[in-house]
Image 1: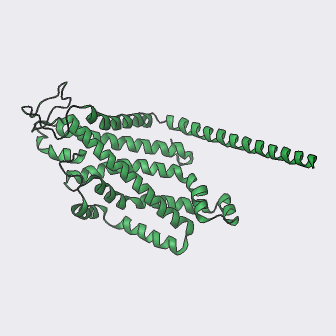
Image 2: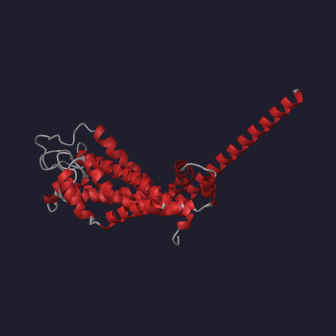
Image 3: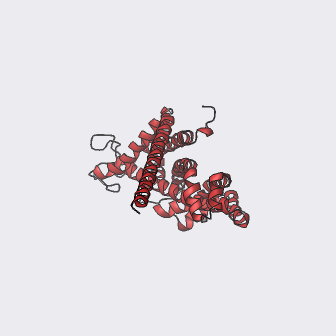
Length: 311
Protein backbone atom coordinates (compact mmCIF):
# COMPACT_ATOMS: atom_id res chain seq x y z
CA UNK A 1 0.00 0.00 0.00
CA UNK A 2 2.85 2.32 0.83
CA UNK A 3 4.51 1.62 -2.53
CA UNK A 4 1.18 2.14 -4.32
CA UNK A 5 0.58 5.44 -2.53
CA UNK A 6 4.10 6.62 -3.30
CA UNK A 7 3.67 5.67 -6.96
CA UNK A 8 0.38 7.61 -7.17
CA UNK A 9 1.95 10.65 -5.54
CA UNK A 10 4.85 10.45 -7.98
CA UNK A 11 2.49 10.22 -10.96
CA UNK A 12 0.48 13.18 -9.67
CA UNK A 13 3.67 15.20 -9.21
CA UNK A 14 4.80 14.35 -12.75
CA UNK A 15 1.39 15.32 -14.17
CA UNK A 16 1.43 18.60 -12.22
CA UNK A 17 4.94 19.38 -13.46
CA UNK A 18 3.93 18.56 -17.04
CA UNK A 19 0.89 20.82 -16.76
CA UNK A 20 3.05 23.62 -15.37
CA UNK A 21 5.56 23.21 -18.20
CA UNK A 22 2.75 23.21 -20.75
CA UNK A 23 1.26 26.38 -19.24
CA UNK A 24 4.69 27.99 -19.23
CA UNK A 25 5.17 27.01 -22.85
CA UNK A 26 1.82 28.52 -23.81
CA UNK A 27 2.68 31.70 -21.93
CA UNK A 28 6.03 31.97 -23.73
CA UNK A 29 4.30 31.33 -27.06
CA UNK A 30 1.70 34.04 -26.32
CA UNK A 31 4.43 36.54 -25.40
CA UNK A 32 6.31 35.63 -28.57
CA UNK A 33 3.21 36.22 -30.68
CA UNK A 34 2.61 39.60 -29.02
CA UNK A 35 6.22 40.54 -29.68
CA UNK A 36 5.92 39.51 -33.33
CA UNK A 37 2.70 41.49 -33.69
CA UNK A 38 4.33 44.60 -32.21
CA UNK A 39 7.39 44.15 -34.46
CA UNK A 40 5.18 43.97 -37.54
CA UNK A 41 3.20 47.00 -36.38
CA UNK A 42 6.39 49.03 -35.87
CA UNK A 43 7.25 48.55 -39.54
CA UNK A 44 4.48 51.08 -40.27
CA UNK A 45 5.95 54.38 -39.00
CA UNK A 46 2.92 56.36 -40.17
CA UNK A 47 0.66 54.10 -38.11
CA UNK A 48 2.90 54.44 -35.04
CA UNK A 49 2.75 58.23 -35.37
CA UNK A 50 -1.02 57.97 -35.88
CA UNK A 51 -1.38 55.93 -32.70
CA UNK A 52 0.46 58.47 -30.56
CA UNK A 53 -1.30 61.39 -32.27
CA UNK A 54 -4.68 59.78 -31.63
CA UNK A 55 -3.76 59.24 -27.97
CA UNK A 56 -2.57 62.86 -27.71
CA UNK A 57 -5.79 64.20 -29.25
CA UNK A 58 -7.95 62.03 -27.02
CA UNK A 59 -6.03 63.20 -23.94
CA UNK A 60 -6.35 66.85 -25.02
CA UNK A 61 -10.09 66.49 -25.63
CA UNK A 62 -10.70 65.09 -22.14
CA UNK A 63 -8.10 66.92 -20.08
CA UNK A 64 -8.13 70.32 -21.82
CA UNK A 65 -11.67 71.40 -20.84
CA UNK A 66 -11.13 70.09 -17.31
CA UNK A 67 -7.99 72.22 -16.85
CA UNK A 68 -9.47 75.34 -18.43
CA UNK A 69 -11.02 78.00 -16.17
CA UNK A 70 -13.79 78.41 -18.75
CA UNK A 71 -16.71 76.23 -19.80
CA UNK A 72 -17.73 75.60 -23.39
CA UNK A 73 -20.88 77.74 -23.06
CA UNK A 74 -19.43 80.51 -20.87
CA UNK A 75 -19.78 83.96 -22.46
CA UNK A 76 -16.89 86.27 -21.62
CA UNK A 77 -18.16 89.83 -21.55
CA UNK A 78 -16.26 92.24 -23.77
CA UNK A 79 -14.26 89.54 -25.56
CA UNK A 80 -16.09 88.70 -28.81
CA UNK A 81 -13.97 87.58 -31.78
CA UNK A 82 -10.68 87.85 -29.88
CA UNK A 83 -7.60 86.51 -31.64
CA UNK A 84 -5.35 83.80 -30.21
CA UNK A 85 -3.65 84.71 -26.92
CA UNK A 86 -2.16 83.04 -23.84
CA UNK A 87 -5.56 83.18 -22.14
CA UNK A 88 -7.41 81.95 -25.23
CA UNK A 89 -5.03 79.94 -27.49
CA UNK A 90 -7.67 79.52 -30.23
CA UNK A 91 -9.28 82.92 -29.61
CA UNK A 92 -12.98 83.49 -28.87
CA UNK A 93 -16.08 83.29 -31.02
CA UNK A 94 -18.58 85.96 -32.01
CA UNK A 95 -20.26 86.05 -28.60
CA UNK A 96 -17.12 85.69 -26.49
CA UNK A 97 -16.90 81.94 -25.80
CA UNK A 98 -13.45 80.35 -25.54
CA UNK A 99 -12.92 78.55 -28.85
CA UNK A 100 -10.34 76.05 -27.60
CA UNK A 101 -12.64 74.77 -24.87
CA UNK A 102 -15.51 74.52 -27.34
CA UNK A 103 -13.42 72.64 -29.91
CA UNK A 104 -11.91 70.28 -27.32
CA UNK A 105 -15.32 69.60 -25.77
CA UNK A 106 -16.73 69.05 -29.25
CA UNK A 107 -13.88 66.63 -29.96
CA UNK A 108 -14.66 64.80 -26.72
CA UNK A 109 -18.33 64.45 -27.72
CA UNK A 110 -17.48 63.31 -31.25
CA UNK A 111 -14.89 60.80 -29.98
CA UNK A 112 -17.38 59.46 -27.43
CA UNK A 113 -19.91 58.87 -30.18
CA UNK A 114 -17.29 57.22 -32.40
CA UNK A 115 -16.11 54.87 -29.64
CA UNK A 116 -19.68 53.91 -28.67
CA UNK A 117 -20.51 53.29 -32.33
CA UNK A 118 -17.42 51.09 -32.73
CA UNK A 119 -18.24 49.07 -29.60
CA UNK A 120 -21.94 48.61 -30.45
CA UNK A 121 -21.20 47.85 -34.09
CA UNK A 122 -18.59 45.28 -33.11
CA UNK A 123 -20.86 43.61 -30.56
CA UNK A 124 -23.95 43.42 -32.78
CA UNK A 125 -22.03 42.44 -35.90
CA UNK A 126 -19.96 39.80 -34.09
CA UNK A 127 -22.99 38.15 -32.46
CA UNK A 128 -25.07 38.05 -35.65
CA UNK A 129 -22.15 36.99 -37.84
CA UNK A 130 -21.05 34.30 -35.38
CA UNK A 131 -24.51 32.77 -35.03
CA UNK A 132 -25.11 32.83 -38.79
CA UNK A 133 -21.73 31.33 -39.66
CA UNK A 134 -21.72 28.66 -36.97
CA UNK A 135 -25.25 27.28 -37.22
CA UNK A 136 -25.75 27.73 -40.97
CA UNK A 137 -28.98 26.46 -42.53
CA UNK A 138 -32.14 28.49 -42.05
CA UNK A 139 -30.51 30.51 -39.26
CA UNK A 140 -27.82 31.67 -41.67
CA UNK A 141 -30.41 32.36 -44.38
CA UNK A 142 -32.52 34.55 -42.11
CA UNK A 143 -29.62 36.50 -40.60
CA UNK A 144 -27.89 36.89 -43.98
CA UNK A 145 -31.11 38.24 -45.48
CA UNK A 146 -31.39 40.70 -42.59
CA UNK A 147 -27.77 41.76 -43.09
CA UNK A 148 -28.24 42.23 -46.83
CA UNK A 149 -31.40 44.24 -46.20
CA UNK A 150 -29.49 46.69 -44.03
CA UNK A 151 -26.73 46.86 -46.65
CA UNK A 152 -29.01 47.71 -49.58
CA UNK A 153 -31.16 50.25 -47.75
CA UNK A 154 -29.95 53.80 -48.52
CA UNK A 155 -28.09 54.51 -45.29
CA UNK A 156 -28.03 58.30 -45.58
CA UNK A 157 -31.78 58.46 -46.19
CA UNK A 158 -32.48 56.26 -43.17
CA UNK A 159 -30.09 58.33 -41.07
CA UNK A 160 -31.87 61.53 -42.03
CA UNK A 161 -35.34 60.16 -41.26
CA UNK A 162 -34.36 58.48 -37.99
CA UNK A 163 -32.23 61.41 -36.83
CA UNK A 164 -35.12 63.83 -37.32
CA UNK A 165 -37.32 61.66 -35.08
CA UNK A 166 -34.89 60.42 -32.42
CA UNK A 167 -31.60 62.26 -32.95
CA UNK A 168 -30.16 65.21 -31.10
CA UNK A 169 -28.52 63.48 -28.15
CA UNK A 170 -25.03 62.05 -27.84
CA UNK A 171 -25.99 58.43 -27.19
CA UNK A 172 -29.10 58.43 -29.39
CA UNK A 173 -26.92 59.54 -32.30
CA UNK A 174 -24.40 56.79 -31.49
CA UNK A 175 -27.10 54.11 -31.35
CA UNK A 176 -28.58 55.26 -34.66
CA UNK A 177 -25.19 55.07 -36.37
CA UNK A 178 -24.39 51.67 -34.85
CA UNK A 179 -27.69 50.13 -35.93
CA UNK A 180 -26.85 50.97 -39.53
CA UNK A 181 -23.15 50.07 -39.46
CA UNK A 182 -23.10 46.54 -38.00
CA UNK A 183 -23.66 44.57 -41.28
CA UNK A 184 -20.06 45.13 -42.43
CA UNK A 185 -18.57 43.41 -39.38
CA UNK A 186 -21.33 40.78 -39.42
CA UNK A 187 -20.34 39.67 -42.93
CA UNK A 188 -16.66 39.51 -41.99
CA UNK A 189 -17.32 37.45 -38.85
CA UNK A 190 -19.76 35.14 -40.66
CA UNK A 191 -17.12 34.34 -43.28
CA UNK A 192 -14.51 33.67 -40.61
CA UNK A 193 -16.84 31.36 -38.67
CA UNK A 194 -17.67 29.38 -41.80
CA UNK A 195 -13.94 29.02 -42.45
CA UNK A 196 -12.94 28.04 -38.91
CA UNK A 197 -15.92 25.72 -38.40
CA UNK A 198 -14.32 23.30 -40.86
CA UNK A 199 -10.97 23.26 -39.06
CA UNK A 200 -9.90 20.06 -37.29
CA UNK A 201 -9.77 21.56 -33.78
CA UNK A 202 -13.38 22.74 -34.09
CA UNK A 203 -14.58 19.44 -35.57
CA UNK A 204 -12.82 17.63 -32.71
CA UNK A 205 -14.63 19.81 -30.17
CA UNK A 206 -17.96 19.11 -31.89
CA UNK A 207 -17.24 15.36 -31.94
CA UNK A 208 -16.37 15.50 -28.23
CA UNK A 209 -19.84 16.89 -27.51
CA UNK A 210 -18.82 20.43 -26.60
CA UNK A 211 -21.73 22.85 -26.44
CA UNK A 212 -22.11 25.39 -29.27
CA UNK A 213 -21.52 28.33 -26.95
CA UNK A 214 -18.24 26.88 -25.71
CA UNK A 215 -17.06 26.12 -29.23
CA UNK A 216 -17.93 29.61 -30.46
CA UNK A 217 -16.44 31.58 -27.57
CA UNK A 218 -13.57 29.27 -26.59
CA UNK A 219 -12.32 28.00 -29.93
CA UNK A 220 -13.46 30.24 -32.81
CA UNK A 221 -13.87 33.84 -31.58
CA UNK A 222 -10.28 34.09 -30.22
CA UNK A 223 -9.09 33.32 -33.76
CA UNK A 224 -11.19 36.16 -35.18
CA UNK A 225 -9.94 38.91 -32.86
CA UNK A 226 -7.59 40.35 -35.48
CA UNK A 227 -10.18 41.19 -38.17
CA UNK A 228 -12.69 42.29 -35.53
CA UNK A 229 -10.22 44.75 -33.97
CA UNK A 230 -9.28 46.08 -37.41
CA UNK A 231 -12.91 46.70 -38.37
CA UNK A 232 -13.64 48.32 -35.00
CA UNK A 233 -10.71 50.70 -35.50
CA UNK A 234 -11.86 51.64 -38.99
CA UNK A 235 -15.39 52.14 -37.63
CA UNK A 236 -14.09 54.92 -35.36
CA UNK A 237 -12.90 56.94 -38.34
CA UNK A 238 -16.09 56.35 -40.31
CA UNK A 239 -18.27 57.29 -37.32
CA UNK A 240 -16.40 60.59 -36.83
CA UNK A 241 -17.08 61.60 -40.44
CA UNK A 242 -20.75 60.55 -40.43
CA UNK A 243 -21.44 62.14 -37.03
CA UNK A 244 -19.79 65.39 -38.11
CA UNK A 245 -21.83 65.42 -41.31
CA UNK A 246 -25.10 64.79 -39.47
CA UNK A 247 -24.32 67.42 -36.84
CA UNK A 248 -23.35 69.92 -39.53
CA UNK A 249 -26.76 69.34 -41.13
CA UNK A 250 -28.44 69.79 -37.75
CA UNK A 251 -29.49 66.13 -37.54
CA UNK A 252 -26.86 64.83 -35.12
CA UNK A 253 -25.78 66.33 -31.82
CA UNK A 254 -27.65 69.59 -31.43
CA UNK A 255 -26.69 72.79 -29.59
CA UNK A 256 -26.03 73.74 -26.89
CA UNK A 257 -23.99 70.50 -26.70
CA UNK A 258 -20.98 71.03 -28.99
CA UNK A 259 -19.57 68.48 -31.41
CA UNK A 260 -17.01 68.98 -34.14
CA UNK A 261 -19.76 68.91 -36.75
CA UNK A 262 -22.10 71.47 -35.22
CA UNK A 263 -19.16 73.75 -34.32
CA UNK A 264 -18.30 73.88 -38.03
CA UNK A 265 -21.96 74.62 -38.73
CA UNK A 266 -22.05 77.37 -36.09
CA UNK A 267 -19.05 79.19 -37.54
CA UNK A 268 -19.60 78.57 -41.26
CA UNK A 269 -20.58 82.22 -41.70
CA UNK A 270 -17.07 83.27 -40.60
CA UNK A 271 -15.27 81.23 -43.28
CA UNK A 272 -14.23 84.41 -45.12
CA UNK A 273 -13.52 86.75 -42.21
CA UNK A 274 -11.99 84.23 -39.76
CA UNK A 275 -11.48 80.82 -41.42
CA UNK A 276 -9.66 79.35 -38.41
CA UNK A 277 -13.00 78.97 -36.61
CA UNK A 278 -14.04 76.46 -39.27
CA UNK A 279 -10.64 75.03 -40.12
CA UNK A 280 -9.71 74.02 -36.55
CA UNK A 281 -12.63 71.63 -35.90
CA UNK A 282 -12.42 70.47 -39.52
CA UNK A 283 -8.73 69.72 -39.06
CA UNK A 284 -9.46 67.55 -36.03
CA UNK A 285 -12.10 65.59 -37.99
CA UNK A 286 -9.56 64.94 -40.75
CA UNK A 287 -6.77 64.00 -38.32
CA UNK A 288 -8.89 61.55 -36.34
CA UNK A 289 -10.19 59.92 -39.52
CA UNK A 290 -6.75 59.58 -41.09
CA UNK A 291 -5.20 58.27 -37.86
CA UNK A 292 -7.93 55.66 -37.45
CA UNK A 293 -7.55 54.51 -41.06
CA UNK A 294 -3.74 54.31 -40.92
CA UNK A 295 -3.99 52.48 -37.60
CA UNK A 296 -6.56 50.03 -38.97
CA UNK A 297 -4.45 49.20 -42.02
CA UNK A 298 -1.35 48.63 -39.89
CA UNK A 299 -3.26 46.46 -37.42
CA UNK A 300 -4.54 44.36 -40.31
CA UNK A 301 -0.99 43.65 -41.40
CA UNK A 302 0.28 43.13 -37.85
CA UNK A 303 -2.49 40.81 -36.67
CA UNK A 304 -2.85 38.91 -39.94
CA UNK A 305 0.40 38.86 -41.94
CA UNK A 306 -1.26 36.79 -44.70
CA UNK A 307 -3.41 39.83 -45.57
CA UNK A 308 -0.43 41.96 -46.57
CA UNK A 309 -1.10 43.51 -49.93
CA UNK A 310 2.22 43.92 -51.63
CA UNK A 311 3.89 45.77 -48.74
